[in-house]
Length: 400
Image (spheres, rainbow, N blue to C red):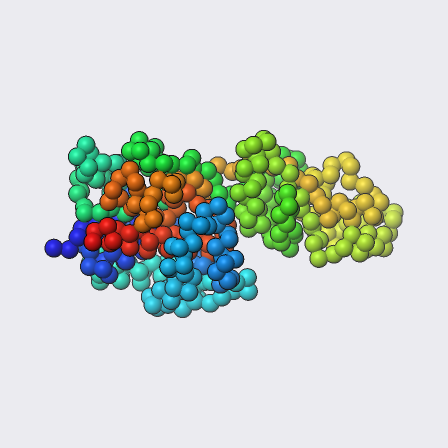
């Protein structure tokens, strides 16, 4: 008889684990708490499904920070090239964008997910939706809550791919953390990652510019400076540039109560060039008109006033310096429910090299529920897919 494996969670990590196990001959059942699988995966594809990134692997692995040493072997075993080939094997041609990010040509997640589910069905993978895992019984049986009552399952091995705690309406709400900690697993507190930050905008700025983009700016925190974009929101700032710094900013806010972010509105121009451009505008005009004629947009002018307040100087040299460095005080990170991803989770110290829980032999973990984080740009999905493969291979090795 084939070995029976339960995969709890129908996101990318769980689905990839299921495919790997089924190809090896296991009888696989996916248990998903929501009415359908892949809900957050579909949301990720709404603005273009960024599968992975094409940069050199050494730089790629560096995006995972402190977790890089543990994730490196997983990603090296299922690298970006392997992920791209897998997607193309499902009939989804890919391309590399100008930023190096890899997308399916269809851009959306839905064609890929449909093809993937067809493959899983052909491999004999069973999918049970509306099955909410609630833990183990006293004798080690998986307990699942369904609309028709409790269901008990005793598989030969289990893969947990329960996600983090961001966007809980899509299925992953982090309720497993307390449950696994009670079982003796090491769990690092869940925290928001790739999220925006709150700022105390003036009412005038908030009402006029919420939703306005800041394009081609440079953001600096501490010794880290990067080019990117940001988006003004009613609460503060969002966007790829902010997300790339969000881990450092989050820790600073937690330690000190706030964080100072500097925005260079014209990173391509030198201060002297900006000062010359401002000096060339008619001196009798208002400061806003002079800045507008010097090339600043209304939202950029408004942001300068938010950053410098009444101290915004009329002198061209001082104005140029203000444009090159607008300080913003970030008061708090947005709630985890509004974050793109989650930091924290199952600590690698509590897992063996095969991603098996030391506290629960025969139970493996994958995906965002592991304690790692990464910026957007393809790194999140790559680690989810790769850890799903690794957990499945670990289960296969354990099953013999």
